[in-house]
Image (cartoon, rainbow over all chains, first blue to last red):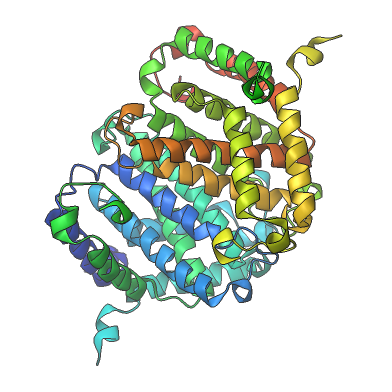
Length: 124
Length: 124
Length: 124
Length: 124
């Protein structure tokens, strides 16, 4: 057992990946699902998520209508589903990649410099 | 034990959520992390992901340079991280929401109608 | 002389379109500039524009640093350039299309119903 | 008369800007139209434009259904309208900014280096 076993692809994400593979295979959608097209679809879903927030004044959850809250939940799901499909095509383990990126972010945004500011690391 | 136990928030995602909470708390970033801002950041990262694919002719993995493949892995991670932060603020269990959405998609795209076509469900 | 002469493609946009055609032709970029790729590039530039605003608290111009204001001006330009290239490939007169859309929006958002609310027309 | 007179804000764009100001004023939408919100709305419209192309195999115009072609025309218009509103709030002359950016792009992508390649200028 090593670190990768601890951090690696979760069972829950693998289960979703397997359902998505079956879903696409049942519908013969393989030729549509190039990495480029999946990245495009992911952006379209991310923007549908953003649409619910576009005119909010404070941007908090309380400003979302119950209808929007339900819509947001569906769009979050869509983003996750395309993310899993795209990572699957590229053989990327999402959870390990996320832990690696968090470690990198900790270097780019050291607490002493980044505390209380939203500046990009290139400007810290 | 019930269905939610099987499908619900994975340990791996919960672990990332906890690291992200700590990361933001250490840097006092709470006031920047409104749901609206997180949804915006998620879109920015999704577009950085898409940028790697924008001029590809077939859109396959083989067309990505090794440098782009590494960049894509980081952007996939960024999208997942913002997705987890946003879902956390909205008390959405991502994995359950994804399973629910897959069930809905199965209704919107029945195999008999959707097989081999990329049409939207509203046009099937 | 008819309405289209008044509303139609402006000389300024036609001049930009001609410079863009020459720019792409000089570099032999025609095969990269499919409508799909141009729409993708437009989204990437729109997100680079949005990045400048993502953590702003009020979202006003005063919150942008001078460096960001210069960056925003460049990204606005990039969005316009891709918009003109894409419209050119699709034989769409942008200015006429914009006037047509404004007329449609006036129907979808009648003053009496839309005044002071940010609701989508489907919810008015 | 100077170069700016030749390149500057076109009458056609100024006319659209004036209609948009009136449209928003009639509906009392000023407080929703912060630069941040307009940049967000622009991204949402850009993604609605992209949606029409997401599953196309070659990405050409011929692959768009007549219904999609009409939809694309509306989304192109929406992007232009938000672009004009945002530039108006930031006192950016879009046409001059676009000419300036084209001059910058000519430096970043010299013909001799950029011919026939889609590489980013940082990789040329």
